[in-house]
Length: 221
Image 1 (tube, rainbow, N blue to C red):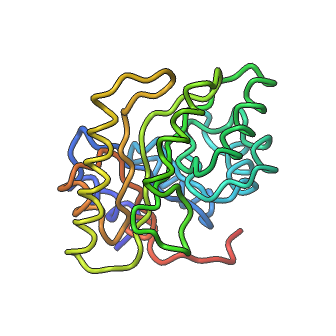
Image 2 (tube, rainbow, N blue to C red):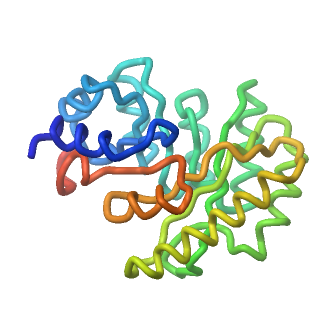
C-alpha cells in the first residue's frame, strides 16, 4: 500500500477525539509531504538534529512532537521548534528545560514519560518517582505538563492492555486533582503495533510511524 493509502486506513480507525502523530523519523521530506497532503499536521521525531532540520525545511504550520529520549545538552536546540515534548523523564531534564525556556522567554508543553513496564531498556520515571517529579513541576514557571506518555516493553495483547489500563488509571487520578502547571489533556500511548488496543483502553494521542510510512529506512537521514 502507498503512504496515502496507509494514512487513510489509519485515519479511518482513529476517532475524532484521538490525535494522530505521524512518526516521521528517518523519513524524507517528500514522504512527509504525502502525509501532509492528506491533512496531517502533527509529526513526531526522536532525534534533535533531524527535527531541527525538518523544522527549517518543511511547512511552518506543522506541529512538531519530540518523542525520543531528550538529552539535557540538546534541549537548547529545540526551544521554539517543538509543540510538545513527550519525554520528560527526570528532574534533571525538567530543570534544564525550565532553564532554557526561561532564558528564551517561552513556555514548554511537556508530557511526563512513565516507564509503566519497568523496562530497563526504556526511559521514563517509575510510578514511585512520579510524585517527586510532579512536586518539582509545580515550582516551574515555563514548563507546563499536559499529560502522560509511555512506551511499552515487548509483550502480547494481554500484557499491553494491562499496562495501558494502569496508565489510564494514573492519568484519571491526576486528572481529578488540582495542580499548578499540570493539567491532564493528553494520554500518549500506542504505536503502529498496538495503537488500536491503546485507543480502546483510553489513549487520546497515538504515535504511528511504520503503519503510515512502511518499514523504517535508516539511511535516509
